[in-house]
Structures are given as C-alpha cells and as structure tokens.
Length: 378
Image 1 (cartoon, one colour):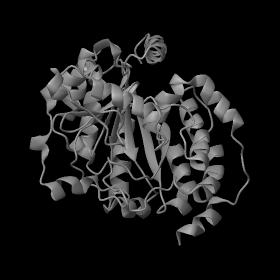
Image 2: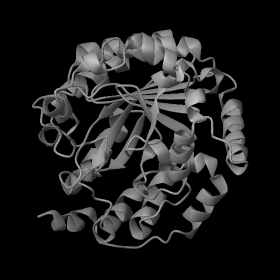
Image 3: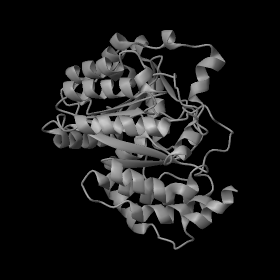
Image 4: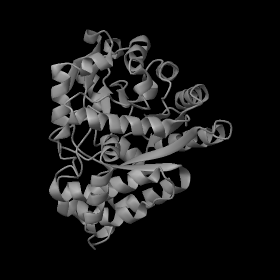
C-alpha cells in the first residue's frame, strides 16, 4: 500500500462531503471498470454471457487499452481504488497492461481488485503476476468467484471443472505471493437459493484457503441482464433474515480491513427488513462505473448513464460537471435499490457516525439455523 493512502482517502471523504453540502459534484476516488460482456461462465443467477449472442455485439464494439487508460487516468491523483470486473476480465484483450498503464498515471492508486471466475488458470495467473509485479506500491487482490465447494460450484456456474481450476489458480498464486507480497487472494461468494443449504461448508473452505472472503447476495440488476427471473434473495425479509442471523457471527474483525465487511453484513439486516439503504449511497460521487463501450454511470447495477466520456474529451472530471451527471449523483444519493459491497463500502466510509448508529440500533434475532431456513427453496 502506498504511503499516505489513508491520508488521501480521508481527504477525499471529507472533501466530497463538503462538496455535496455545497451542491458541487463529488470527485470519485474509486472506479469500477466493467471490462467486457464476454464471459465463459454460464451462471444460474446471471445472464451477462447472453448479451452479445442476443444483441450481436463483440469486443470490437468495446473501448480498448488506449481509450480505457486515457479515460481512467484523467482522474490522476484522485484515483485511490480500481475494481476490474465484467463479464470475465481475463478475456479482455490487454486487461493487465491497461491496469498497469492506469497505475503509472495515477500516483495515489493503492488498491486494485480484479474479479475472475478462474476458469482459465494460465491467463489468470499471467495477468495477476503482471499486475502485482508492475503495481508494486498497490495492494493487488485476486478475487475468485466461488459459490460452493466442489461440484456445487460447477453446477451453479454452469462449467464442469471450474472448482478445480480455481484451486489450481490459487495454488499457483499462493507460490507467487512469496515473491510478490502485495498480492492477496480473496473469494467472493453470492448467496442464492442454489447454495443456501451449503453455506457453512463454503464459509469454512473460504476462511481456510484465502486471505479475504466477500459475501454478496443474488439480486436482479441491469448488469446481470436478469430482471424478472426471481433471483433476488433480498426482497423477502422472512426468507433472508434467518440466514443473516446465522451468517453474521461468522464475520469477525481480525484485521482493520475486516471492519467494512463486518459492518456490511450487520447492515444487510437493516436493508432486508426495511428495504432501505442504511446510509446514503455515494455511487456516482465516491465511485463511478465505466462500461465496456465507454458509457459512464453512477452505479454498476442501474441503468443511469452520465454519458459517454469520449464526448467530453476523455475527461471524467469534465463529464461529472454536466447536468446529466449531476442528476445521476443526486438520484444515487436517495436510491434504496440495493445494499451491495461495491457501493456500501464507500458509502459507509462517507457516513461513519451514521453507520455506527445503525449497527448499534440493529436488533439481533434468534431464529432457526440455515438448514431449517433453507427449506423454503424446495
């Protein structure tokens, strides 16, 4: 982690809060780069992989290395955190080289997280080695999607042998960590009706085989191209609350970086029971999303375009001053559509006192164990 990271983060949090009070646009310190709609997973809860076959698109329609680097680098000293997602990022041409270009152009970039399904170990390991070795002053987190142990994961993700390929990736990256101390391994698991009865085994596995474990909850969103398919497990509080009561105690604070996930899990109960965001969302202000074709949006999960940055001379700060971008930032601040890690973490950091009060006011309920709660899926 680059020296001064927490100082610059505190400056951005305070600065954006002041700017919002004055009615000025926030300056994002986190960018979510949605690299491509190509994906070699066939997930039961996500249809990203169907976008190009259904619409006739291809990577030829996507922004490439030079454009992506120019766009994100326009944030310069303001960029502290880069998340690379998709689709499958390792299928994006020159993904690692693009990340390295951005790192060179942004002096305070200190956290780089790259999501992957781990289906193809060779390109995944090559990309992570390139990024971690080049971006030596940043923490580089390889985030593997893992929704079950063994065949269960393969069934949910629709690719036989995917679990074994993830294990191969982690084994090889584990050896690289010995020479690249800034490299970390993490699992991200999506709670859905397909794995509900198997969560204890999944959490045990993840705690033993990775540095971090991120838990998300299946939902319907613009990104996943799955509206109306009944995947959202957060809409039924009576269904999810018992599960949360079992999951929450499993997330303890062992290191400072655990605090955000610990808080997120406890405030998920507030969201599920009241269907409202526990703290004001800072999507579009603390964070922005850049899509595969260059469309900039306030949130990864909503269709709330600020416009194409190419039309603003590849200047993100210039785009954020437009009336359309200002309107999106305002709409995001009152949005209650979700409580997801990618936006909840920056939002909680922007409202630490409100976050603490929400956690203290949340009431723990004693309810049946996961095995009993899962019977509603039958």
